[in-house]
Length: 143
Image (cartoon, rainbow, N blue to C red; front, side):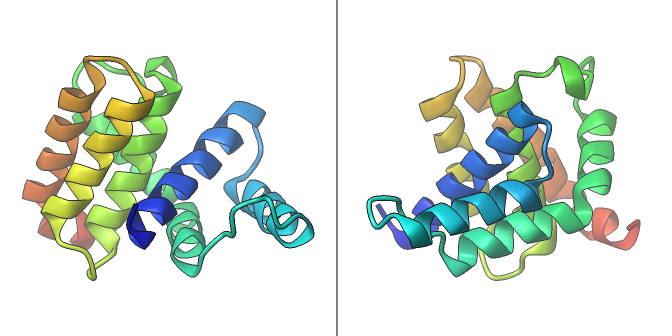
């Protein structure tokens, strides 16, 4: 598994855990970093994982607003927790991170949905992130 793929998966896991625990993503990130330093059996938290989690945290409210606005007939708190957090991570990386091609971001998010969510989730994630990709220049300006 490529390094960025692992970093995305860990970032997703941190967002998911924070959502489940009702904690901030920064708190859960700090827990993961502390555990990885104290126990060499724990996977390290890479710079890119930290960048993704901290970047998401910076735009969390805006990202949730975008998901609510464009996920037709879905309230964010009624959305499956896995899907919600894959979309959060994917939206951050797609809209605010310039170093990764949009198609790669969307494909990686779809792969996470295939691995961790329902059979319907990959197409849902793909559709919503593709919409964000199309609107990306406007979404960045509207912040």
